[in-house]
Image (cartoon, rainbow, N blue to C red; front, side, top):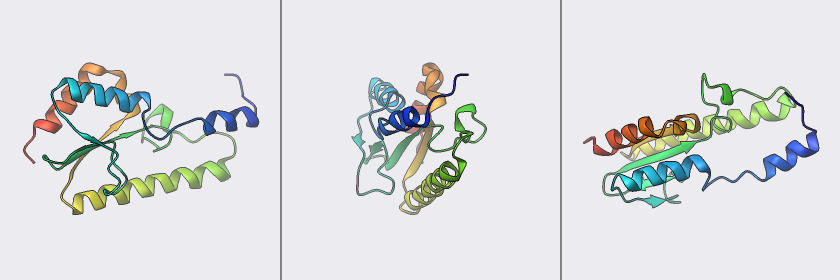
Length: 137
């Protein structure tokens, strides 16, 4: 694997957005195709969940495997360089995610976390989304 320069990596990271990424768009498309309607990124909820189903009191969070450190996922591992920067940053993300999920559950929201790698299998993801949204609670 070719190494990229620190300057180039910095440019790449700076261009990464926090919403409307491919995995989130995939979840939105599948959910909409299943007939469900939702709100996006409600700021009044902990963590601004990606998809919010107010009538069902359910939320879906779409997490990037790297940024949210998906356990056991190849994409969820720490970079080899500049670990003094990345390790605390990514640990804070994981801690913030756990706190947001806990707060959502305290407020009696049902939650589903969809990992970026799970969006690669559309059929499986569709079944998972449908099962979550159909379940009574």
